[in-house]
Image (cartoon, rainbow, N blue to C red; front, side, top):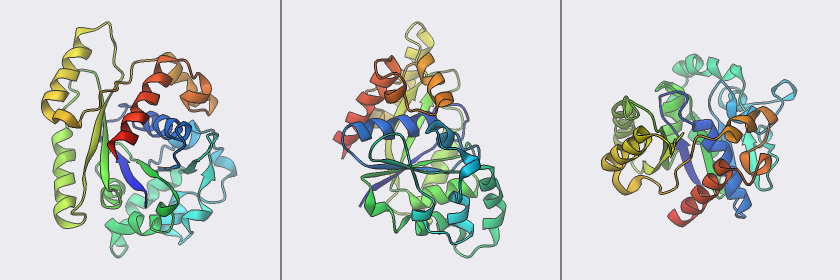
Length: 253
């Protein structure tokens, strides 16, 4: 049975999709199998793996709302052992439509039941909000991976996320826990980056991974080529950092 990990932070632009794509791809390099469920209507994880949204027969919305099996949604990625459950802008409608669905918070958990045993890891790339889609991810997940960017106000708003986690843990998913915290967009030249890492380590303690993801042009370029960083530029600093993070994730188990 796989570990289902929600990659979550209600702030946008902190590296959620980048982490979902590249961590899964680097785990694939280590011989692990992974499914990336794109649960963000922006569909960045989908396009980051080079999936053409215009040619999709089904997407995650269809699994949630139209009783399409997850097996019929999943498509292969360019990395051996790594698959994608793609999303399109259609998923934005699910936020509203789920309101009237019975057991609305648990729909994602239900649709993942039949596929989670196929993979070592299932990553849920969550939207930058704390709406009903994110609540579904919290209910479906075993644990949370929280990317935090090394910038001013990095911890701002995290109390709301942790409050939501505690609420879901208390009412709907008693085993939910924090898998880890990963620092992203680290700039070795700035004192601020070092201060933010210290601040986050002071707050989360040993939940913070040792591997730190740097600011890296290649990481920014890779999605436009539809490739994870380990295929786009395996020798780049970004690729090496995600490779180290993948090793930590495997050791975590």
